[in-house]
Image (cartoon, rainbow, N blue to C red; front, top):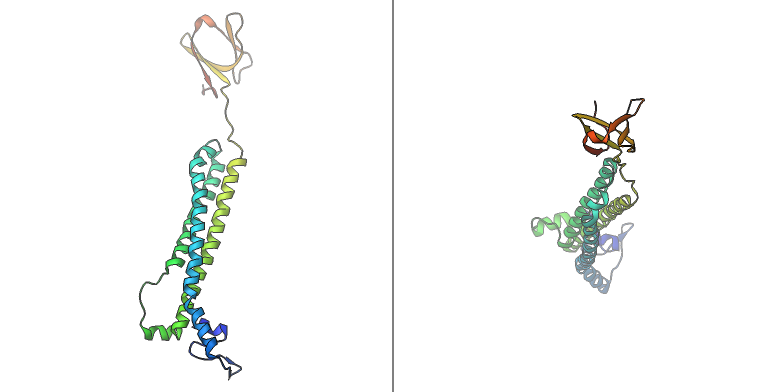
Length: 228
């Protein structure tokens, strides 16, 4: 692996080369580079901590609003729209958690075991290069977290907008009257209730049903008539 210090013009243990020719490096420049390397990890971790705090606050605010109002907002929507909104918001929450996990990994590091000095030299050539590699890894984690949370917020905001603009599910009005009279049941649309009788338009029948009010024992409003 190429040491990160090589990209800055300094090799891990000495001066850099250009076209095979060594370039002289002053002691002051070497000391400045060493200080830059030593402070690279704290600087990246500090930036990661600030981003993690901001992302956590933002996601908490968004998800709290969704949890509080989400069920009420989609209760009147059709099944298809509810499924789409659930996928958008659920996917956004899952990506938000993944983004925060990457931010935490960038802040605390993800080293699972210590390396011997020989292993460190074999992989990174120098301690300075190893420190820069750790800082680069944290920076990549932070970038992944930012990208993931950006996508998550896009999904969450889209899901919220859909709850505002999605059409409500069609409702079936209580347009039919189911009448119990003299042991029979007649269902239809009420035409009139004048002269002591009910006039019902029966679905599929040409003539309306005429039911005397004195024979009615009960009636119920319904969205549709039961099958005969």
